[in-house]
Image (cartoon, rainbow over all chains, first blue to last red; front, side, top):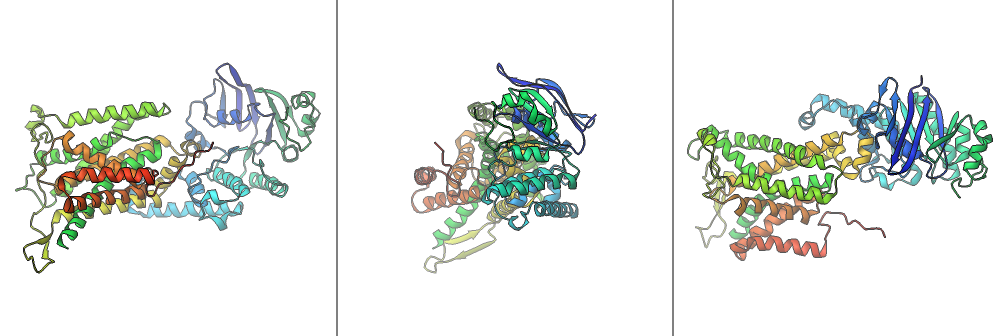
Length: 263
Length: 325
């Protein structure tokens, strides 16, 4: 059994079955892709996994722990961290504070400790700052730590989202279109960064991405969603040859760089 | 000159109290995006609690220990903190995610409930323990817990040696406590991990929860802190205007509403704005009272509100939100 075990998860909004009977068994250290045309239910699935929507059916297990019924913050603390398709940083806060936020949940100091500036509070605050700066260094954001997050360039904001998710010290990282809007150079750097981060932190990664070049190159396995249903699952080569997948993308070659969602 | 100095001092004293109350409005608005109309009543009950504590412990103007003011202050802050926690837990939390208008109407309901509790006349059971209801039909005043001799008394104008500027211990207490609490809050919000979490929840609660922040806990803490600050203001106001004998609806709740004006003037949702707005309202009110007419003091405050809303509707330190079309 894998680290992230998803069994028969589904949700309907009114009459629309957004995701049906989704199954996924992600072993530790895997780098799995999740693709599909626009509106296929990929982001909805992320929302189901992270507790934004409670699933109507099925179970989500992280290791031995069942995540169903937990609140989003409890799931995040349990080790499931994510980034967002539309960047959702805390724009008013500094780059450093954005990362420190995610470290907070593991803190033991109380408000009283903070007001009295007890040694425990100061030690913890220092530890959080050091760790956050290390993360920012990996993502090459340490020089801009004191700026407001919204002043970062686009690629920097995407990287900061990943740094913030990693500050939760997750077991599984869910990346929602990390390459969206990036230029080719940034995409190459991102590709290396994702691999590097996975190896360095011993992560398991589930990646939603529309950039087929990126997905085919870095993912070991790929799952394809269409209309909320898994239509294929396999290695990149298998997926590229799968007739159902080609049909879902209306004949557009999945390797092509053009937007696969165009109908 | 004497008048100027006296008015400035009173303005800063009263203004810092408005600021303390305004912080509660602004913090809750910042996080939950609704105006907690019950806040002015929490302030009123803060004064009430400090009165009840004095009654229970037998403190009177004539007979009380040196530390009495501290006991009443901290006691009423703790009681109001618990009250704020309870209000949020019972009245607002079940409506999390409901349309904002529902929460607003609930807030008005809670406000009316508390206001009427404040107007109760007496209760035999409580009276046995020396606890009276001070803001009922026959309002009484809070016992003065500080010496009433001026600490400093001087004449500025040699032509009028009898017109003195008086610095009373109560002014020192009011300004000292209010500014200490504001400094602590400033540090809490901008210098600690709890404050970071509060700012994150205020910016985007949903994302904050996905980053492992327990939003409900942050909201509870916000209510406790805001209510405790209002209680401090209630107690200090009772001490500052000790001769005041006013019913709950006649004066106390109105004072709380003026603090709401302070929050709006400073930019609702902005902690520093609430402090600045409070001081500004206090100064405008006291200067108006000193130089124009005492009877129109409410008029100055609400006129200032209209002017600010006309020319800078987002408040002095608030951020204008441009609606995208």
